[in-house]
Image (tube, rainbow, N blue to C red; front, side, top):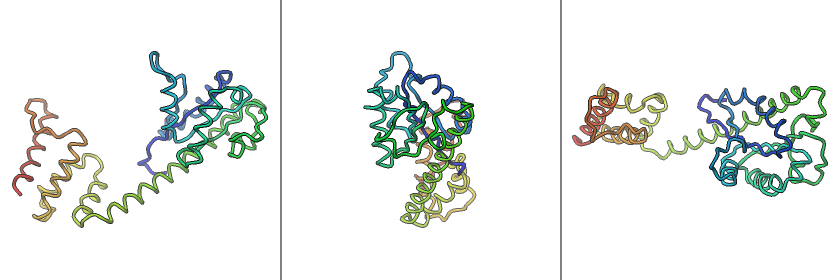
Length: 251
């Protein structure tokens, strides 16, 4: 797994009767949360005053992984079945999310839309049928980790392919700038400006480099052409802005 990973969004779809098991599962996924692999969301995250329907829909759309916590109560719930599960399966079929059924309690799922999906715990044995529920939930957590790792690897591969395609259509100097930025991901504007001052660029390339520095500074909200003040950190950013403007105006 690459260190540049972006945390995946996880959505819990469960019936209210199963909230205790859901809470236990959340605890067993704490390791993935603390490693910034997964960020879970469920309806108990809704703050007072928020429209719960909109909040659920928003986070379901953002989810990379959707857990369907299956029980008779889940199947019986019109909201879980008709809204959350239906949309989750649509996203799964479109390749926009991975849906994982978590079998909480014994229930007939023959012919259901999620019956064809690989479920957890292993062999589809309901969590409540295990002699040790924590062992069952640990088994679920390991399975989810495997799925999350695969998704992150696929996303990283896609990012690399996209990046390579972008670099392929750039001019030689633009490509050199972007490769330079990749090596200096922390404060790339500072290092690029320093590279100009150290004479690492051809004279005809300086404007292109300066424009890229300005773009980075604007994106990072460091561009302060109208600022004047005594705050040291802001003053440094202001001086950097002035230096970049001088390179742009002088060429």
